[in-house]
Image (cartoon, rainbow, N blue to C red; front, side, top):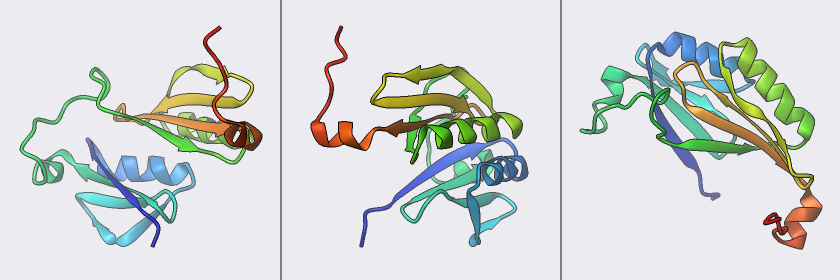
Length: 141
């Protein structure tokens, strides 16, 4: 069985966040969703559990920070091409997200960054498969 990742994100408005992630092409697993949370299927191995602040508070005693003003995490997501990176960011912006910085093109790797409506940072990226097999390039200069 492949290792899977489940990311829990507190959101202000579950229906709006659900709509945002569906606009990126992700699906919702209704079996694990209700009015206070939704299970977003990113891939067979990656799932987001978006939950209202009240529901999220049931799984951690820690205060919920505001990802628009404090870094909590940055999630990079691999894509199959540069075009897929651009398509995802365009969809995110059209669905209410915001662009964090302009595209970064290192030749062997292309990335962009956006924040969802709650401010959670995403970095879709494409890496040249030939560069992956050749090992990390020297980007120090």
